[in-house]
Length: 404
Image 1 (cartoon, one colour):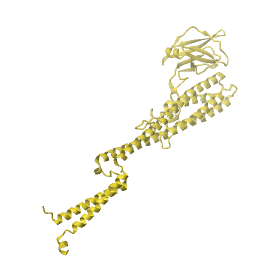
Image 2 (tube, rainbow, N blue to C red):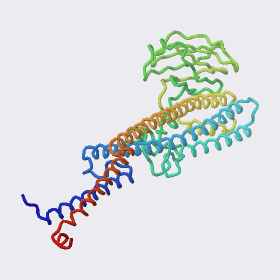
Image 3 (cartoon, one colour):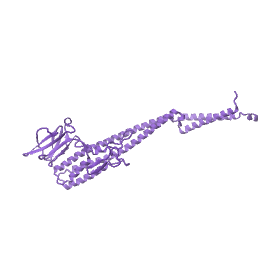
Image 4 (cartoon, rainbow, N blue to C red):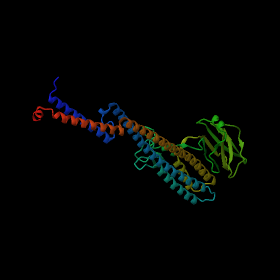
């Protein structure tokens, strides 16, 4: 078979160009420290690297959501910490107002102090994150969620909370349930002084839980009614309108409270009950508003000419309502703490996911430096050999032979 000089020359040129291309690619891979620069280098590895990058991007997105939730919950925790301090001041003010020698003017000063604390609490209830998102606005509100009006403080947000799409971490909190809808009374039942001006009731307590839960339903009501005949004071306890037994002689009087017990409950009555005085008891409902509690206390402390029993009832009701709201807001703060713990765990998972994705991407496309250097050296040697071959082929022509 005859091989023309032109064919040999072209073959040498093609080989030289191919060797040069491989040398350039080897140098490019070494400079970038990447084994796979384009899909054609290794289609399978390129696909694996792309999936790994997608997982890393997802983890970064999740981390941004975690950071947003953590920032909001830290702000909420700080706000609720301030709320706790204000509620402590409210309690101290109410207890101080119980001094029996205080005048109407002194009680009016106490009312002003409570009004100031109440206004500060409302401002904290409308706390935002600095970007226009209200921390206690539920699922979202473009305006302050709590507004003050003639009927008291009203919630204009949407019940529930905003959460992140992936981990479900909260970005806002349902403030309505804690600020306005705590279980009223002592959390089990609520006692109300219906008409007495000479006696008062405390918040009551459950003394026998098994009996209480067995004998009561959400709609169960009780009434304690006093009767004074011939200087003898008796009382009757009715359940859902029916007397629970015969009238009992009342032996308590003065400032010390005497307990009346029924169906696993105990209700303390202080002062001197008058004929016809009535105290109503119903099961607790989610209707306790810290603002309503303070509004009633402020209004009643501003009212002049009230008896010591009436003032005692005002303060007792306010302290009972305050305790209920404190418990609800404390529970909300506990949920904030749990959310922060979840954020820490979510951050760890996100970091692990990103690290795994980076490892998988590295395995798929990163270069082995030792192997890359060896490959570059090989391509250099091949290129030099191709140059020498090309130089030798150039001499294989008739003109070189004649000229020789």
